[in-house]
Image (tube, rainbow, N blue to C red; front, side, top):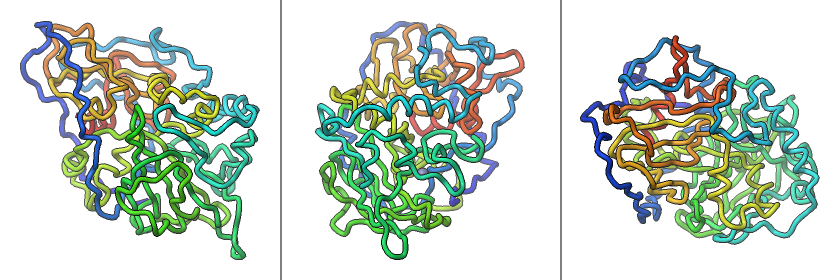
Length: 432
Ligand SMILES: [Zn+2]
């Protein structure tokens, strides 16, 4: 893997900046501007970095408190669910079951009858991005998900499905339907939705994604990206900033990567998700990685996926016909970060449909899934008058949801209070 190396001396950059108390006076909420910043991210050089494994691989043991301010985080016993979190039928947070918790959900979905073409109100069609028909024909995921070498098909699903749950898989791996005489895939890879070509990486060895393409779907109510990795070739007609229609060819399925993928495991790695922020380079520079960022804001470390299979099943059942906002906001919350700051994050400007602007100007409540996807953000409604600008706290968390081995964002101190980990602070730095 080509994850950039860290300079450990630089890891302790604090996000908290201190400053004057800012919440004592109540001020009217300001809605983030729905700016035109979404448009035209300058196309950046052929990329390199890898997002596939950007999550920590080891469960950091719970540490002593990293004291910050006097504000007390709620004391929630590990294993308990806090009441604000809705129980999900999907059971995605049951870490005791690991990825097997996904299976009943997928199995129930796989019996859905074939449906009309998928559609999203604002953006037209949503299409399966590869040739294999098993998904559209309602077969179980084993029929179209490519396992990693020697593993069950679950290993090609989204989530904590790799390395015994220690490594996060941020997309799904889709099987080929056709192969040439040498057994290499021949399948066309197609745009899942109409979108703008945001990134083309032609240099396979530069990234664990190999040759890959990122599309930005800026016509949607929530402008998600989709990512198509390990391509054998990229369509020659594809160029930066080109608008492609749903179903338009992007390239040919393959097994390109900065590491070796066995021929029998060739697949399309597909992602759909959100971007943390628009000033990723500033964060990257602060980390003093030894390798250059060739990918601009589309560096995998600045992207966070959601479950593509959940996305496609929801689309197929008509659940995305009114747009993506509800689907994303209704992802299960694992923890809520309260960040007292005068800043408005790029995230709120990029995704106004995920913003609740009602509240105080002194900061934000950011709702995260267990794997670190910020899926909604709200102005703070009940700020503490004592909180200083720069203060970060875990406002709420779900004990089950924060115990995944591959996602280390919340720790508890010796008194049982929840604290943000350095990984979580890194996400906030990318967002603010
Ligand atoms: Zn994959």
